[in-house]
Amino acid sequence: MEPIHQKNIQHNFTYLKNMRLKNQLLVLISFQIIFIMTFILCSNYIHTTFIQIYFTESSQKIYLKTSNSLLQSQLNEYNSYFKSLFHTNGQTLIQFFQLYTYLRNKTKNNLEPLNSKFNMNYGGINSKIPSSIQSSKLGIYNTTLSCLCYTNKTKFNHPYTQDEFINIKTQEAMQSLGMVIFQGKTTLQSFLYGYVKRDNMLMTYPCLQRHDIANYIPENRTWYKEAKRNFQFHNPYNRYNFSITYPYLLFKSTNIGLSMTIPFVDQNLDFIGSGTFDLIPSNLLQKVTQQFGKDFTSIFLASLDGILIMHPYNITSDKLPLYFYNESITGFNSRDWEGLSDSTFISNCKNQTTTTNLKCLYNSFYNQDMFVSRSTLYQFNMTIIVLISSSEFNKFSYDFNSNLNSQLKNTFSNSLIEQACLFVFLCFLIYFMTSYLFYPIELIINAAMNQIQKKKYQNKHLNTILQSLLSVQILDLYRSCQHFNKLFERFSFNKTEQCQKIESLQYPQKIQEIRLCCLMDHKKLRKLDYKLRNQANENLDLVKSFVKQVYFQLRLK
Image 1 (cartoon, rainbow, N blue to C red):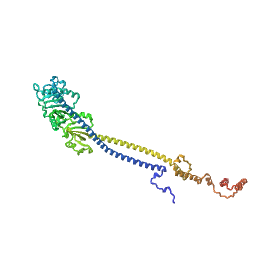
Image 2: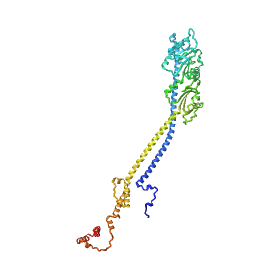
Image 3: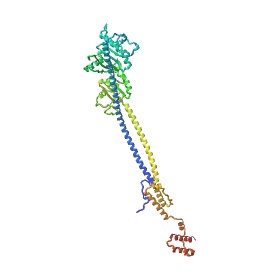
Image 4: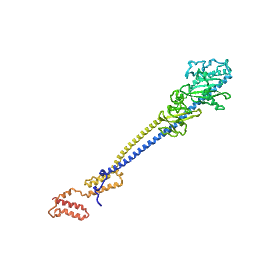
């Protein structure tokens, strides 16, 4: 077997071969820790990227789902609100008819003389409304909220006929109804009036002073025709039914009006006239948004053919009637309007992709997408449309993604700092643990190197704590090293001082015979002879030392 020399050993890493075994182990472990930490960091970064993509998609789904639920919820509230409003006004018309019928029957059964103090005949051309009780004008007509006034379509006979007398007494009883309505502040309706064709009497509230009353023909009005159609549609007419007319321009202004009308019938269920409310839905917009908040971009109330009854636009009278698909004002076209009624229509948005349960329309006027929901009030021939601007969606999506990115970056940076601190801590821990555990191996290596380099080695002992932590094999190795070190010291070939003195002496050139008996005392020889005879097992080292002592004494002489 050939001996192994240091020159024959080849290393791939020149710097690593000169390091201590402990440091080599630390370097290898450090590389492993760095690899593990790098793998963990890369995994966290990849997971963070996927989480960001996943949550971004989820945020859109969450917003669309929430928007759809919110739209439906608000749409149901608007639906309930308008139905309640219409039914309440319809109930007012019913009570108006019942009150008129009751007072007329009571007056007919208990006819009393006329009282001029209750004469509020301000509805025609005979009397002017006093300035002290005048209210804001409706068109060109003076009005007052203080009373419900009446107008007879024909001149009275002189003397009054029985029916004329009953009608005038009934009107005297009903005129105070205006104060009840005014104190109750039921002013959502713009105009309340009734026309009884049988009695040729027109009643209005607020009291409207019409100077052209002679040219006013109720039978040609849309509200009267609608009431008559309603009566004919429900045959026999055995229950109250109110309906809403087609939208029209109210008092030649920019307000779109609606009329809610109910047929008046006599005891034989024959049609005798109609009671009507004129509604201005645009005036309701502010009250509606105050009640439900301003979370939505637009709220529309439209007829079934697309005429906007309630809308947020400021327009002039020449733009009326305003349709939902008037693209120059609303930003929507006829295809959008048809799509609202088409269940298969999904979206024509340009910027977002929506779910199938939430319709989306592109608004060319505002150049943005809008989420839309629609509900139809078939009983009143109207539809409610609620729109949400995509800017709210974009703001929500931007804020959500910004917060998500910020949180993910903070989490990733915190994780990076924590892992860096953990890496440093592990390096220090491994260094001290390795130094502590490799201490006996270093002692063995130092002992061997000292023997090779012929240096005097100072023996070091391990403490009990370290011995309890070391493995059995390392302890056995350490003990073996200590044992061999003692053997090396015992059989050491290192030159001592005596050996050096002997080597410095010259080789003797003369031969002399030395007799021990002549050099030593006879008494000492006798004692030595006695000891050799009686102590056969005496240690030979004593003899050797004695001989050496004598020998060195002779040499020194």
